[in-house]
Image (tube, rainbow, N blue to C red):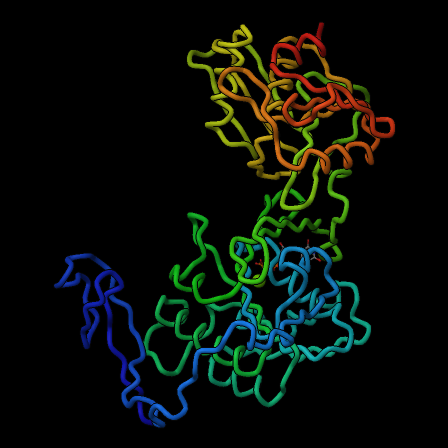
Length: 451
Ligand code: TYD
Ligand code: MG
């Protein structure tokens, strides 16, 4: 086979060179040269087979149905199922459970023909893992341990599976390039070849991608641009909960979240997360409150814990897990300045249950109450929850979709919920056994709670 011509291009300015160089002579940047395949002859055919622009009304959308997977959480983050011909990238740290997630998905697809390409594990290893997982009754999975993209594509075309899973994109290499597998050039080339296959045959392709130390997907950013959907699988290695988050989705919202629990028998979908994010304990503990948050479209009641104790060694410490550090500092300043609590001389530790990270501003009120509760050693009753953003003036601000948060709190049997006066018109309302109270200022909340 004649070798395809490759050239090196600077990723910064586009300068082209027949060999690799450390520094670009044009833009003087270091380490920007990447190997690329050059197509020599332009495609035959001329202008006759050029596609014409179509009126939007004329375009047939009937093909955009979705493949509903057996995994509810995955359907949710994908925006309702897999779109045929789409390419989904699942990124995550080593050992987080990416292979488990996709193998389990394949096993649960009863009877559907699936091609599982693995460049990381041997067939036997995959078999051993599969035996531990549930749902293998009538699985129709073809395991292919191969790392050459061309043969993967050849097999894919012959087998015509309903779904192709690639574990992982970094182990694949294309014959057209000399670069090593996992290099930027290879990752990009292999993705492009798989992409063409996916679009031509309308077969969805799920790719597993490794993550680098700094938390970004290994390989060029262009990989994320190429695929249709990017999912991030994250969680603490030592905790059982895993979160599947959408960071890009051409076919749905990016606000959705899937939650799993890693067990000895694989990943279990957690369809009612509020119940696990609130720890079981005997009686109320100071510094612990419940926030009524929203992740995507899903209301989530989550436990916020604070520990405020006198700083005995010089500079007070500020430490937070799961909540933004800057936000915590701001709230501490508001408590100090607007409410008169002396936080300056105390160490402050804040933690969100379940290893979750949250950015919902509705956490603010719950955080403030938990800080004061710990400082003053005044426990908050267990059946109380909070949802409001705090402004720099110590005022309670409205948060979005308050009805949904109230409904979830009521469903879980909470007794009182504190919200902003601007979220809710009537000052107080009851929903089932839940009493919703609204306030304008942080100080009013503290007076109501702690007297
Ligand atoms: P894996 O899917 O291999 O991670 P990745 O592909 O993201 O690198 O999952 C690895 C971890 O999952 C491993 O440390 C053991 C754990 N695990 C379980 O706890 N239960 C199981 O049933 C399986 C298959 C794995
Ligand atoms: Mg793996």
